[in-house]
Length: 322
Ligand code: MRU
Image (cartoon, rainbow, N blue to C red):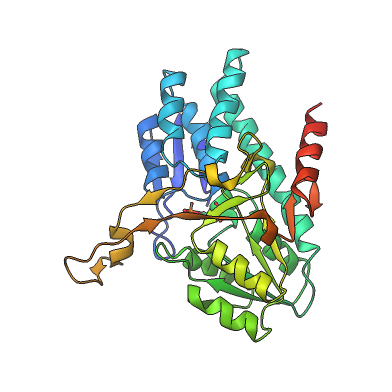
């Protein structure tokens, strides 16, 4: 089942808000419906929302207006803006939005495959890896990034173990577990506050995470809780790797302080599976992402390779554009 695809003038999206219990497709006939699927996290994960938005542009009758609608659906992940701008720029050169969207989707598949290959090289037999949130095929509409590398290493025959952060409040850990089970990869889910204990006990060898926006100085936004994991990893001398395609880099923004952080409805914290678990009258803050300073990152892994300095990423990217 495809995560996002374009068929007969419609954008088809696998509804991730129903997984892992139900596999249902949402059919979007308008830009507004695609924007809503992104906002309500039926499609989620930075690269996957980029692909959905690119295809959304192929439904547009007013590219400028619809670009704004799509970009505002979720503010933190920069792939979304990059994908929409890609379609817009090429439309100025007379290229049809659907053709550009297909190009974006194929480029994304290629980027994720190469990231998975580079990341898999770091995984050895007997390793214990910790991951946070969900960064596999569901999150990318392709092979994945952090989880893509994990799946690739298992397919290469390596034997290792994965600890999966539950990732409150949206439980993306359940999606990761679903993807690991489908690939028969041994793993256990842990509550988000367990990682420190396991690191202290030397039960984790390294951390693999994805990103939603990596800025010029190497600070990056990712799912809430990533910063805490990174700090505890450094305290325990555990390497912390960020796996993300060039479409997730934002070299226009200088530091992590300038990243807009999405805050979502308090209901996502107060309610679980249709039950209110807090007393009436309790309010919550639902901060969707946090920013991890670059000093906690051992290396950035993207389609061009493994970079221990962010400046190396920007130089390589500029050279490939020239
Ligand atoms: O709110 P989500 O589920 O869209 O957040 C997803 C993440 O934070 C992922 O780690 C990130 O988008 C990278 S996906 C390859």
